[in-house]
Image (cartoon, rainbow, N blue to C red; front, side, top):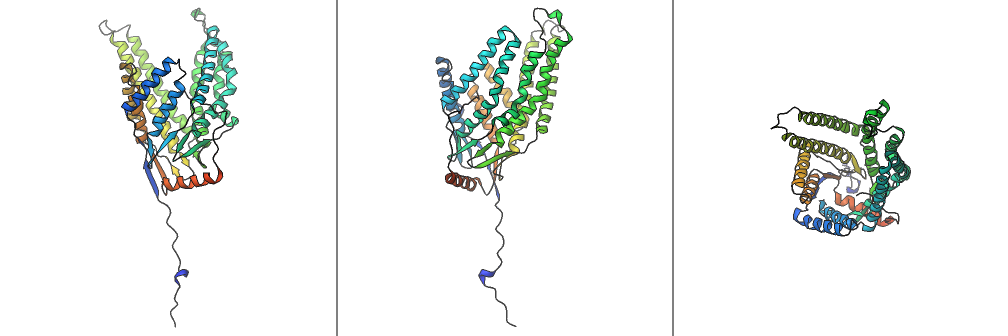
Length: 384
């Protein structure tokens, strides 16, 4: 019997190996001395222009921080127009001024003014996200954000509860504290209770709104974190706040019972507990929420963002930053900002199947074929 010879082209080829994930670490290269020069000039010009230059100051700051944020051999860039930022700040200032002036007459008048502005908030939130996305680029490719008014409303609707409560609940008259009724006590306890109940929902839905409607070129982002996971974080945070409030209350009461030579130390201890306690809570929520949002986010189905923020190091940074800013009369603000940015970058990575270069090249090719739209005339930046 003759041997059967298989031609080379007829041989069974093994399937190509699946692309291996490539992990790239983020790196922040900004320096305190460099940023201090930008910050001090921004501060001076903002003061002498009565705040108008603050929009240009924000652009300079963002360009510095974005330009010094690197991953996979490339940095980010910011292209924001200061005029759009100025429009956002004028809107915010006008709303705040109207609310403050109304509050001079009565809390209920201020609540009515707040209700008037409520319908605009979903629109402003979505337009602000869109502005910041389209003015951010990586490897010369822009980010984008598209969300409807209805989606914005679904994320922030609980905020309407607070002015409504202020309108319907009776207020305590400071001139007649002895005439406090049980109904008035509801006005004291219901707003904080409503805040505790709905704030985690708002944080979860706004983050989902931000992530799920964003894209890099044509590649969409998606977040899988559940709202219940945000509630777990904030229930712990609220318990910590209550514990710190009790400790501070006991310390305050001790002023009336402590020996005279110890009484002057009580305010110092109260200040220390306040700084340490609330810096720890801030570090806890920022670390947990940051890890939750970034860790559950995917880009194009193949890019992950592992985040390893730790509560203790972040809380320690916030404590030392707060003390440095207080005792330096604000001059340590640039140093504090650089420290936070550097630590957050160190704890963030980019995990991409096949590497970010091939992914970005594929997305860029798709964008080149379809065209890339820019921001529209209604762009506004509400983030202050």
